[in-house]
Structure formats: structure tokens, C-alpha cells
Length: 410
Image (cartoon, rainbow, N blue to C red; front, top):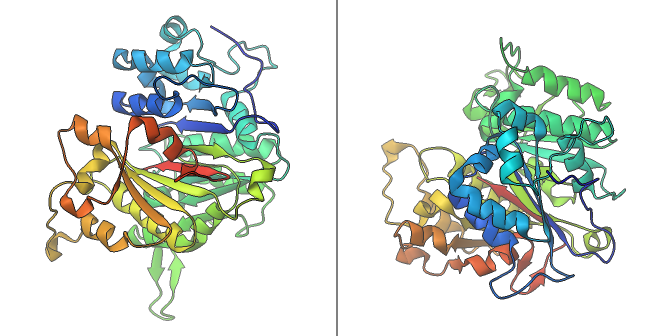
């Protein structure tokens, strides 16, 4: 196993640093398009100005390393000179994968594996990389979309934010979709790490007084799940059964936090990290939202589109890419009756295509692999080929380079 003293961070004059953070399932299709995004286009070799990529893997994403269907893709990624793949050693041991991965991927980097007491943990290494030694950035956030106990994502969120606090960085939590369940009062799991207590403790450790820390839960999502109810006496809404550390807030308030240049993780995400100079060149980062799920079996598609529309209306350059199962949102003619009580996703897309700061695109290989074609209603939507994917995801559009890009996979 190849060991490195540390993961490279960006310095002045160095090429841009882009990354993926994956804790959810990494299917062969996903690993394939990640390879498309990070490898130079066919026939063009990487050079000194090419972006450097770091791919951080934990949780279920680690299992993809042991899946023989992914071996070709991972090996070609790790053989690229400008790409580092960093894996969570604790989770590797949990899944019993250590022996296999040592043999299969000699260039895989596992922080702390030497157990010398001097090596950084996976989470410490990740925080160091994301902050890049930049004193301007004093906070780090996590977009939490999954609830505790059914998912380990809240555990990874706490590990990341605790590591940030240990390095003097202020933590922020943005609970969205099922992530608002993390705010439930009186959680008492018998076998799992108590997420409610973990968030409350994190607020105290961070030095925030009760109610003042920037730990927010989306009011729409909280209302749907019974955490924000209307008071019949006052007519206003109030939190119900919520821990004090998390405040219920409008989605607009949460997304205003995305306007700053601090790193924000989610269960599957990525982006390009800014330099201090580039932060002064543009008011906002660009946000890329990848819709990867079918439109109606879960809240992922509606939640991703709702976030995209809100950020674009707030003045942030926002781009939505339909990829993997997400391409089904563009296919056929969806018919939704009033009694179905769901948004017609296609109508939502068509009604928002003229928002100036919002752009829609589709990854054409995802359509081709399924034998699908987008509906004629979406013929104007930009098709993204493998050769253009890297530029699209990591901060370029129509020849314009953005100071920072965020990428959230829904």
C-alpha cells in the first residue's frame, strides 16, 4: 500500500483543486461517470494547469472498491497522475475490506493506517484538504438529507464537523428532507450513536449558546414531518419536539449560507475549492445539483429541484444535471391527477426553464444506456457528453470559470 505524508492542498499558482466526497452507494454507472469527469478527454494528456482531483470515500461508497464491476474504472482513476483516492480506514475495517483493497489498489491512500500516532485520521485529512490552509474560511457546513438510524450519514456528519471544531472551524448544519428527523427531541436508540445528543454536544463544544448556533432545519420539511406546527392561539408556527440546538428556518435562510465560500458537504457531493483571490472576483459560488433518482418514488427529485429553483431565484448561478435514474424525469409525458397529491415534475421543470440563473442539462450516456430519449418538451435542454462533464461539474459554463463550484447529488 502506498503511503503519503499528506494530501496536496492548493497554493498560489497551483492548478484548481476539485473533489468528490462519497458516502452513499457508488454504482458502476456512477464510478464510470466520475472517471469521465476526472480523466482528461481522450487524446489529451494532463498538464501543469490541469485540475487536481481528490476523491474521498467512506460508508457504502467503499463497497464499490470491492465490486469487480468497478475495478476497471477505479484502477484507471487511480493511475491518473492528478487524482488521489482517499479511503476511510475505520469504515474499511468495519466492512472487512482491508485485505482485498490492499491487493487490488496499491495507490489507494488510507490516512492513519500506519497507526504511528502521528498520522491524520480520514476526517482530519478531509478537513485540512477542504480548508486548504486558507485563514479566510472560518466555518464548514453539512447538508443533511437523511434521518438518523436508518442511515449512517448523520454519523459521518458529526465526525466531519467534530473534526472541524477540533481545528478551530465553526460548524453549521443544514437539515433538509429526512435530515430534519435529526432534530427530534428525546432520541434514545438502544444500539446506535445518539444523533440528537451528538448535535447538542457539538453546539456546546463549538462554544455556541443555546439557540444561537447556525444549526437549521428546513421549515417546509419540518412541517411535513410534524416538527413545525401551527399554534391555534397565535396563528403562528412553532417548533414541536425539537432539540434546542436546531432552529427551524425557511429554506431561503438556509440557502443563503451557500452564498459564502466555506466548504459544504452532503452524503454525496463535490466541487471546486476557491483560492482567496478568486473569492474576491465573484460574489457567489456556482451550484450544480445532480438529479440521480427516479422522479416519484422518493422526495429526492422534488427536493433537489426545489433547492435549485430557490438558489437561482436568490441570485446564485444554479445548474441541474439529470443523470443516472434522474433522466426518467425528462422522458415520456407524466400525467398526475389531483388525488395523486404529488408535484408533476415535468410541469415544474417547464415552468422554471426561463429563470435567468437556472440552467437544465442531461447526461446523454444515462439516456443512451437506458435506450431513452428526452420528451420533445425538453429538446432545448443541454446535452452533456463525457468529454464535457468535467468542465460542467467543476466550475465552467460557456467559457466562464467560476471561483468555486458546489455539487450536490440528489
